[in-house]
Image (cartoon, rainbow, N blue to C red; front, top):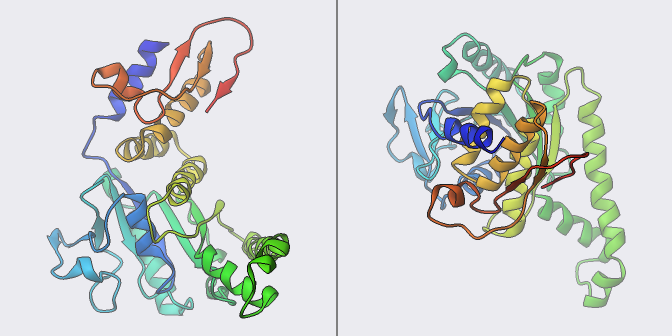
Length: 310
């Protein structure tokens, strides 16, 4: 089985011509740019925008400004060019023209070569807004996106929490107020998010999954964990093995631990036998240590019913 694992890693580390393509929807100031920067481990303003195969001048500082970008622009980051993003831009309140442009793009990308096809849609819903329901009013969820799953991303959770703290604790709370009423604030925030999820799940074609993100302005364990969760939720929502393999290749270039978990899942799905344990190890320079880098893994052959630890 060790040889099989190594074969999967080597195969996924080749095929550099294939890229995972995502359409990211959401209004201005929904946290889309920040999310992409955290996901690709890139500094602010590092976006590379290409239109018709040529780089758009001035795009890195504001590719999502009106007049600079369009939905066909390819947005990449030098830190991980295996991701290709498309931004819907003016998808503010779900206007008819904006929604039709999105559907036209989705249809067009379903008819192109595999390397140009769209693989996932990330819908950014800012929770610091009290009425983030423009997408529901647009009729976007009245049609199926077929094999392209939609992932609902509730962004700016930190902004929602601040709003709730002001409502619950008042404009000038004391430290003891935060401590004594923290659970009440948690319940209010969770209730708001659950209400949003219910609204979206009641649509004819709801998102395939949801995640919540906050405090994405800085690189931290929390923002990294949020990005990893987004990748896992997207992976689980993809309907075809070829799509999951392609995202696995893309993830490998960003986060070896997430990719390791993906490969182990493939082993289990294929019916491999043996105990599979993921353990923390220090990265090294040789090939086997490179495969285990970040969090690593170890294969222990044996009988019985194997537990899987990740």
